Length: 293
Image (tube, rainbow, N blue to C red; front, side, top):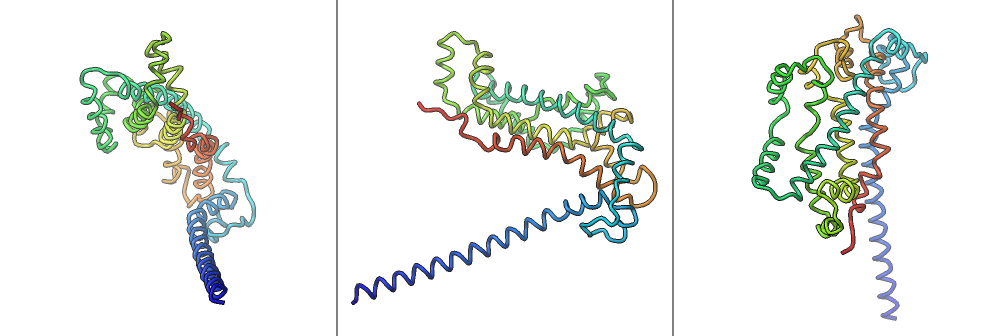
């Protein structure tokens, strides 16, 4: 009887613990869903406002149902503004910057991680120091260099300052150091040169870190405003970040223009979102560089 009683008591305790865990887990899920809705709700408002009229957006700004449904903001954005030109300039800058950073950051990271030369520690210390400097503090020096080289108001002047960044080099260096040296030694025994080892052996194994650099580079160059302002003043070289900022200040006329502004901002976020969702599985797959020794 005592054994039966102890078994019943133990089962009751397990049920109470399971019930308590169930309710705490449910409360956590409710909290997380509430936080997610708070975070996502402004995006829903943005999408809905794109298809509202000026009057409807002003009188009922928080409504998620446009009444009436209108595409006037999108038509005006593409037909009566320089939005297509801004988009083209942003694509040019973002593509070249992304390719350049992926190449130069990976090469610099490999040099710091694997090549042994005098002053390597000093170079790495300088890299860390650059990461600690705010980007705003470098705007004037960059502007002076671009001006002296005759690159102001040109595509190279907008692109070249982004071709390498300290954060990307740091990420690539750390990932290259996680790859076993034995792999490179085997390739070197087979007669591969240093560049061949970097390009054909090590770089394919660093795909997760490289995808991280691609996403950060595209997002950073696509949304960059300060450097664009410091490297160009021609309307023909205006990018989306600068153009959308001008829309927010009311450059196309008077009134709130909420549908127009939010439509431009929403369309600007689409390419970055596509890049992230396309590569998110690759960026999270940190095991692709692992090997067995």
